[in-house]
Length: 96
Length: 96
DNA sequence: AGCCATCTTATCTTTATCAGTAAAATGGCG
DNA sequence: CGCCATTTTACTGATAAAGATAAGATGGCT
Image (cartoon, rainbow over the protein chains, first blue to last red):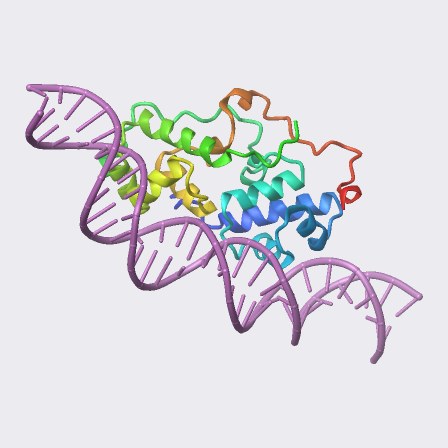
């Protein structure tokens, strides 16, 4: 359980994106028109082959009418949204 | 209330990033070493002048030991983390 | 099999991120 | 005021994102 900065973050985001689009029965073409992002670009993002910019993800989230955060969290642990706090008594400088 | 895709999303993310870094008393140099992202790049991101890639934000979040979602949500409405559902009975195709 | 919608992949061009470096602000603090 | 740490800004060059377009691949359906 070394967690190495989330191995397949892009693939995960892509999967969620595709699921959300499917929920609204939208084609890549339609989402492309809604977002201003080309269908090929959307395809690459959904298949986890492209490292999109923040505003690009924001446009897609806006078009799908969901908060951006939805794309980044596992709907499973979405319940514990109080689980934040950076582990009190920790000093990152110890690792420099 | 036209929402125009959040005009200052980058500035907001940058502010939260800077606050988190301040909480741990890290300099840009130190965070740069932790993330592998240069200090100038971090400065641009924190000041809302750069549209960072998803993996870049992920690296920073990992170094600060907070979930990525923390950078994107307003701590104010962080309470209502069940508020998702894309407004049932809506069809985005009506706007194409 | 053939057609059709949808998605994927490839190529090209423009633009932007990012590392690296160095040079200017900024801000304490003695 | 002059140091000094920190941050910002301004370059360079390499890598990658994103639009546009076109060409394959996939899958359903009669």
